[in-house]
Amino acid sequence: MCFHHRRALISQIVTMTATSESPAAIVQSMPPTISTAVPVALSARDPPGGCPTVPATPTARPVLCFQHCLREVHLLCLQLPATCPLCDKTVDRNRLLLSPSVIPSPFGPASASPCSVVIKPSKGSFLTSLTTSLDLHVGLTDSRGIVHEYDRRGLTVGAGDWRQCVTIPLSCGPNQSKAVDSNFWDYTLEVTENRQCWSRECYDGEDHNCFTFVLDFVRTLQLPGLSAVALNRTHFCQQVICPRMKSVARYVTLYRKLEADHIYVKKIV
Image (cartoon, rainbow, N blue to C red; front, side, top):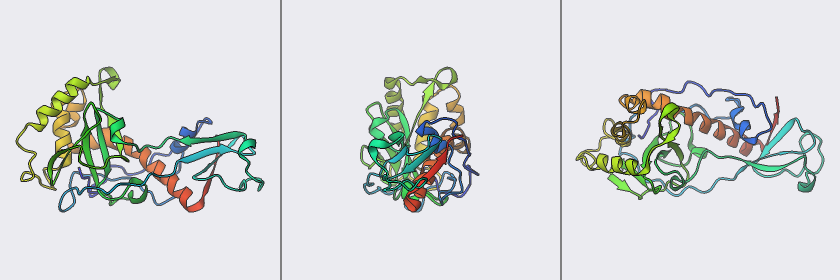
């Protein structure tokens, strides 16, 4: 994009309830009021100067989930505590009701998600920078996981740091359940990039930016349902980007809670 948050497209984080012992369900059940991680608001405007190259982002610690003395309670942390907050007894790795497991992170390298839309902050990382004023940058991966992006430098391929980003694979077929043919994806990407409108001179942070490039590609891809959505920036954000960003906001909320309080107690419903 970069999405400069002038027009809110997410008004709230949807609160969900964990109904199983699955660690992945914990993130879905996080209430939106436990930290400063607020819903992401999106628009299609770049910050002045375009999307700069982002410095390397340090790897975040994994979020751990375990049970100590009660099976109906999950304990979440970034590092196992010395004592249990429920019974105040020593936490022994060999005597846990449920051994520590890692809650899946929504962030990962673009190289692991070929044929996808990829999103990252223009500056900083999601874990440190996610607020309503965060500028986001968007690009596309080809069938080899190499990122193609458009910003003030013009069109670049494999030039940025996309090791910690959010990926959104696009699909086709009934119920959008079938992966796009990788050869067709690469061909469409080549067709899009061959248009004479992705130079540095054509770049405009307000009207012709990284989001413009992605939408043009999606329209050219001509996937049933998605191509029509890509005709409108707001609709594309609402239907494709926002659902993914909700899970990102929940995870960031949890992570910041753990950084501040060290442990989070979650009762299983």
